[in-house]
Length: 118
Length: 114
Image 1 (spheres, rainbow over the protein chains, first blue to last red):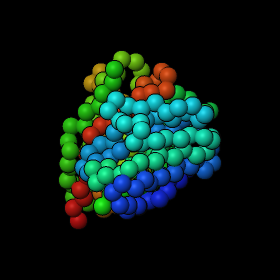
Image 2: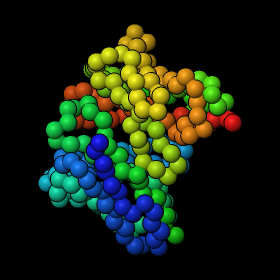
Image 3: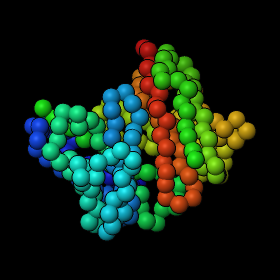
Image 4: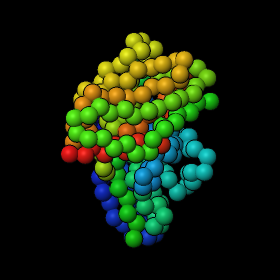
């Protein structure tokens, strides 16, 4: 089945630094990737949708200058949390959908990244 | 517009007894419906999906769900719970048109008591 690899699984950084999270589709071409944020004991909140080669579409309330998303190739999307602060600490999950998959087909999820900002 | 309601935030069952996790949805168009499972600090794994074919859908690990249009429900069931089933479960609806949006329910935490 389709595999999505997300790296790193855990990262601890100091306040004010930037952190990059990678999301790779290993055995399919991901024309669309989604980035979610999950607060403790809550559901996933869609942050942005990225299509290969174009700018990401951010959900209302998500700061595009703080959460930089790059989808430069069909197998890689990155989320960079810039100038991280403790309130950015969260669980970030990416998901991907292949170009050949029908609309309404399931998403393939990475295993998530636990970000802790100290 | 679409939405998903998971009626129970926590469900507790004894090992070997049936599991029922409830999900109701609303959608302006024919929806695709999914159940995902999430273990602690992990991503989401697809259990099963409904995409307008058979209304009774069988998934992995013995789970199944029945799409009931008249009740706008897509409840997840399993005849006999295992300890390894303890996790968070999310009901998800996706609009069949265009590419978005995927809407997540708030999740149901399943506890399995030995």
